[in-house]
Image (tube, rainbow, N blue to C red; front, side):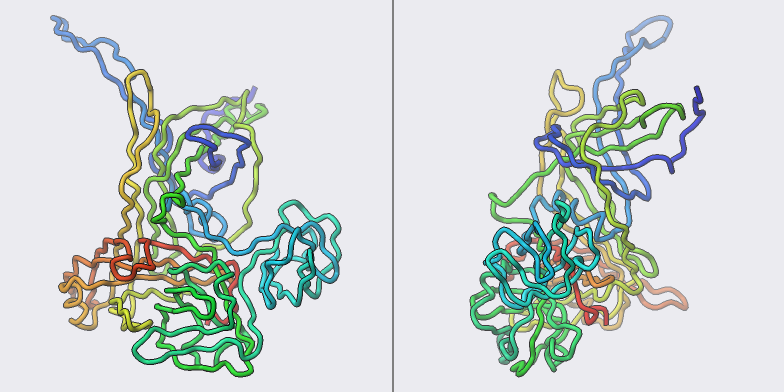
Length: 504
């Protein structure tokens, strides 16, 4: 035997599996996480001692009367380790664009079950293939009944089961796309009858423009990140843009528009999804000759609170916490629970000095897609979700038999460089303010959007030899107050591909 006197933290590992019902696993898929540190992970037992009146003034042995199970941790925010879990905290599922499993790769294209939904000029991200040339960003040059035609492929008769192509955008035919920026109304992105079949949703973000000059508008302000207010067959109405858009016919241009996986807190009851998880922390082996790692688990773990942290000259991180119903362990002669063990691709964290492209806080204007920002620069920003989860206790149950979910609360805190008292007056007037953050890293990224916030605090901080700072606190509410088509409080638009133009 080679018993250890201690176990180091670096020999531990964290993973999660989504449950089929609260506290129940069915064919679990264990996905690893990358914790930087833990907070309240595991089970905490409560004791009540017997303390009868007696001359010896001694208490008697008590009993375990309660168990609080919870899990919290901090990790770097990457596009591989975080987006899937966000669905649990928002209590919704991604609104995805077209995703097609691929059964075979021909030198002329990808074989799928049905290619009828693929529009001309579709832009795809291909992943999961055994041959490197078959992965990556692709332009569909045409379709057959079951083939998405793409050039430059290598024949692959039996690609892995995970092989797929995902719609990430569209290259429009020359001169088809144009911008109507008539004064006094929000701009329109016009085309000829295809917008309504792409699965676009009011409130989600798109990116306009490709890397070649003929793939983007001549007017620079018409390219870049834009938010959709309304989707019709022939045009999109856009209500957020970094710069004011202008009329542009797009003559001779094959304009590219890129789409995202869209996640928002849903107003429709049928689209609200309460997810729960098993969280597993492996604790290495107490004896180096043991066959398995020992492990601890919290089960029935419902996402409770989340905070995204963006600080200057740092990396973006996220704090995640769960309220659970129970806690248990497995010894080294049993090992971790069964299931499929997957890996996640290596990914860098977002660098807050170079990967955070825009943080915009501005008063909402129903007639302008580009209202004047309240501030030019910020030093730090946190955006938080609180689902107000509480455990349900009962006689005869150690732990909890269920959890209750309260109101969906979204808040934010920001410290900005002060330049104009107009910003202070805006806060005092309780104006309708919106907040969004655009991030880009290695031809991918996301937009975090809080369409409507009330801004408080706002007391100037003035110190010797320092810039004047303005700390602000924000509480979000449903955007339906300012626009009936935007019925959510918070959203994420994740782009699986963005052109180099987005990084400029």
